Image 1 (cartoon, rainbow over the protein chains, first blue to last red):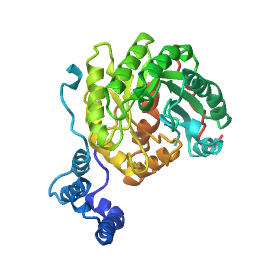
Image 2: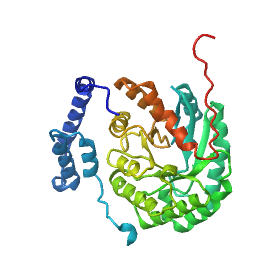
Image 3: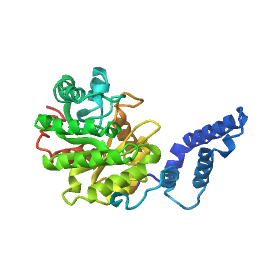
Image 4: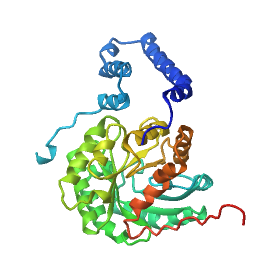
Amino acid sequence: MSSPQSARQVLDRHYLEMRSRILDLAASLDRIAVATDDGTVANDPRLAKLNSGLKILLSLDVSDRAEQVQMLFSDAYVPNWLKK
Amino acid sequence: MYFIDPHVHMISRTTDDYERMTRMGCVAISEPAFWAGYDRGSVESFRDYFRQLTEFEPTRAGWSGIQHFTWLCINAKEAENIELSREVIKMIPEFLDRPNVLGIGEIGLNKNTMNESTIFQEHMELALRFNQLILIHTPHLQDKYKGTHMIVDMLRADSRIQPHRVLVDHVEEHTVRLAKDHGFWCAMTLYPTTKCTPARAADIIERFGDDRIMVNSAGDWGPSNPLAVPDFIQEMRKRGHSEEKIKKVVYDNPIQFFSQSKNFKFKPPQVTYGPA
């Protein structure tokens, strides 16, 4: 079952909402940047993950960015765990 | 449009919520047993909880014209306590013949520990022994992919499990295939911040199809919205999906899955459209 909407309709409908979410992200990153830091935040792995997530958003010609972001924030599965 | 919310913890919600759900078209709900926000201390606490789910809650739902069904288990968070879990599992059959009990659930994993896995498999055994449907909770956030995979491994390792009698809940973009590709039913939870939004759920339906899938609010005592299914209906309408397609996800699919339980004696709403 595909979407009945055209790409133009989706962009028209969601443009302001997407703009707002980018602004929210930008403001959150600014808040971290200007807040007092004991020097540990720059190396916090969560920040690295957020940066990797932003790179996924910039991927070209893909339609599974949401799934890629989900996997970025997921623990690794260990095959054969049940047999151990 | 009439809808069924196949996963909502009404014990945590007010009678006003039932009333608002009715006004939005809800005709039935199913309520899995879950975590109360604290670990219960004895099997008697669970016995009282199951009485509430099978006695008072259907009565309260009935005041608003909603049919109430339920699922019984000890949830994954409390499954770390193996001894208590086994006492609860031993007690559950007392309630399986109650008229609104659809099966065993929501069992599953929380932090993907070995104790949780042990109790999950003992719940599976219970369901098989009493020919019950199974409703499965999958973990949140970073634990979800690994936990869903582990759950599917345990289900597939037991040849007695019939995938069409199992519902894997809280699937998202990265776990929906794990459930659907192995023949299980699945559901998406429309929940603020930690699960799916109505728009993402609609994306998943468009990408993976509308067979063996449903949506629920999982409304509970935390930040949640028992009117989330109507939000999904509205999102699908805005995209131009047909009423028939939407009804399949929010009404027909839950009925098809639940109808495998002998206790699902659903009475469809009687409606006459047009001039008398």
